[in-house]
Image: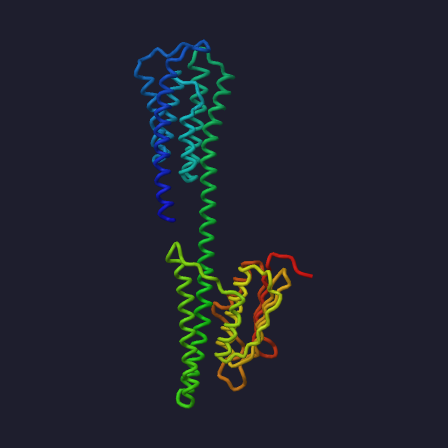
Length: 389
């Protein structure tokens, strides 16, 4: 897809340069022809040197062919040539070539250069047309000169404004794309944190169990080692899936984890010494994105319980009333006599990640120690649907 877009950009660019070249040749011929038109307002036709109309016409039209490469020099050259053509009474039309050049200045140049260039172009155009119409030409009329000068200002200024508007629109699009990229990076970072912290927390706990019972209970040690192997494989699989999406443009699609995986999270936590009681209700019709968020929040909350409170008991409730999903993860804290520090998690990126997930969809997040001991996490995730009666 990326190669296709780059190829299309090159093709479009070649077509644009070809169109500019064609426009330059047409404008040159048209401006040269203006010098030989029959008089229509009492003014004599141009009767000077034959080469001069062609020289002025070339100075007006040919620079348009390279306006995309050098917008500011082209605008200056065209404006100077058109002013000369007006004062010599070689042209009477409202500065089409200047409009084409001004459009590219507004489109391609930053405001600090585009705005002064516009002011200079408008002043030059208005003065040239007014002087040429009202002073130089024999049948000049000041009122007509003001009207034509206003028309020229409108053409040149309107073309510049159109280019500047397109530039602003593209800049807004780039900013939106950059924000989307940043948000996607944060999402991937949160997912990787959840995957790694969950599985490494389980591995650390089970490794401690294996080391503790290796001599007294080899069978329990082997069970702990199998749990470590499974957690390691699970972490590697999920990390490869996430990183594979970044490496390839056509990454294979796999179902995202959802509420069906909550039983697996509870089972992993039980292996690490947290007696989990899981309750899920009212989740039919909840959008997939909300289901994934709920899964990740429960995953991180159980990881914190394993890391900071095991062995303990933990209540996990995921329920929806249609309008929102309410998640509660409440543990009782470390058992008496255990070496776990009381008070629950006090830092790290886990709580921050859960808060960010809740805030992303306009939800609410609270977490903290309970007065009777243990730690509680409560999250409300709006679904964007109406509540069921």
